[in-house]
Image 1: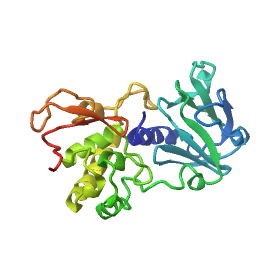
Image 2: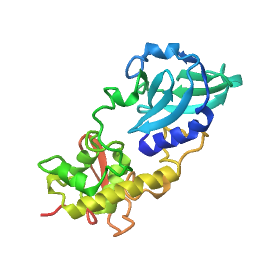
Image 3: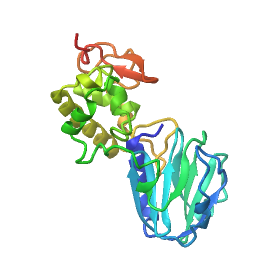
Image 4: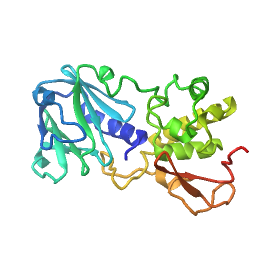
Length: 274
């Protein structure tokens, strides 16, 4: 699944082509995605796009006729192509947003688990209303994380992947952040110390920032707008490295299912307290 850095990369990739442009037409070939595509999108002709933003893993296309919420789901991707190539339609090309200058934003999604929804204001939509702070914002602090973790018995990995606590920390980056902070992923959230919360907030910000800069992790189902894969997968410390030697201590990386997600960690660098 594309995670926060991949979504941020998508926003930055398509924004130069769309910002300031007027929508000519939105073609919906497959209305049945995770949720049925909003009928309002069919009436977006002549809407002017004035901003492209990201909230959690949602892309927001801001227009003077309301906002379009796009989620890439498990396997979705966005691409920019000229109108001359519009007729070359693939099996999983479900939505085209066409601007007056002939640019096409194409949404491809083999598993059809993403979404294209309309909202008068994106932040008021039920999908976004109860989300926690952005991990790279000033609102996400160690004091905030420590306070939120009190009386929470869930594993800290599950805790930091909870959107009501903090948005956009998916499986890959949760594993990486916990490793860099030296925290075992099964540690009960209520047992996190203030020092550990400081390290964890710091590493989450560092890992996500680095991934965004490097263009997002290469996933088999994710393609950047320019068609190039990301580079961050080449330097992942634990994720996807089961059985390989830890770069810090040499111990073999292990995996365990936590919260129904395969979790990678170093048993020596990330010990559970006795």
